[in-house]
Image 1 (cartoon, rainbow, N blue to C red):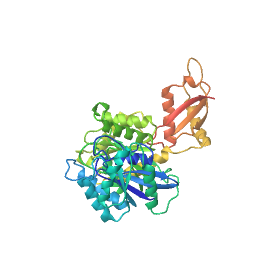
Image 2 (cartoon, one colour):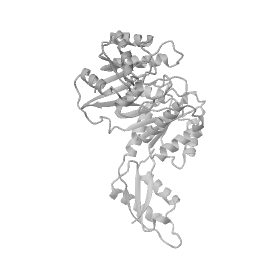
Image 3 (cartoon, rainbow, N blue to C red):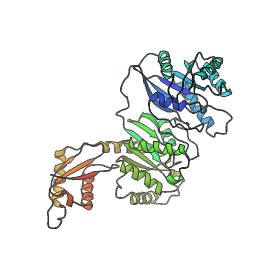
Image 4 (cartoon, rainbow, N blue to C red):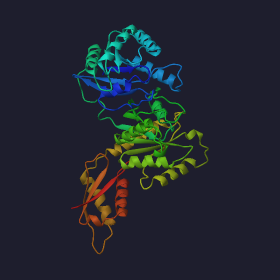
Length: 436
């Protein structure tokens, strides 16, 4: 699929245009300059042509933004990767030094370039667009990414310049398992994704909250095929001060909702804290598969049984849903990171496991006979039949004469017997009792 990169200096409306092209609010938009940091991918369809769009951070130099050099590197990679560059400028400010610098880069890149003059909301602003001819990148296209005017003509021009290869197809990654990397800020989520991919795909700095958007990346190595989703760190609600971080948190929660398996990263130096538990409960509430990764294990002082004791503490905290793989890693030293992928793949196969009804009844009915539900007020409860429900996560219906009298302890017994006979490690199991 062809790739179009949106580039420009900060605050010219690149992310607003990106959201308009992909047809949803996928990239965070805010008045603050420099919101976008990582490359952000989406798909745009126009008149039967489909192409990928990548949103990049604002290109600056000598600013006080600590991420400046990393963002410049990401912009350069995007320009190298793409088939066409969409260069966005702001009609209100005219040509700035940064615009001239980017134009020089683009002329040397030998890539087809479409120059979009943004924020042309009214007719009289069109006259200001003509000064952009001076950049030497062909005719400027007047658009307003906020209200959408001029974007149709712009898309016609983009489709005209793209190499011919496309007709609209379904999303090629629709059936690929989605794995979200979640956790508090600064536990090493982006570093883990970069270690998996073997390249600096996402910006990493020691500053908490570097990642702001949920960034999806296709991964196909070592016999594993996943969509890896790097998310922003989730802090306590009371600590979230700015709108920007609120959007980032919302994106992370949505990434959990749309994933199949969540890799919850915990900082080994602090242990499992209340916020880690809140994120774990969010994963369990959404009935997603879970793998717990204890990162920064290299900086922990170790005794004879440190790992065993740490595992026991975590299992005690997350009970009763304690059947979760726990892996101790050091992303910086590339220690046990392949185990994380293997565990995620195992949890996904458990998560999508479907057990034939005949096999379920063969295994579960003798267990229920040996240990039937306790009688309630002299009434005996008889479970006759079990079947798996056609839900995404493992759910089972037990049909009986008096479902209202079966209490939680017995439901836990049924769940434990199911886990004993069938591997549901890392997945929540829902038990429903129905009238036969």
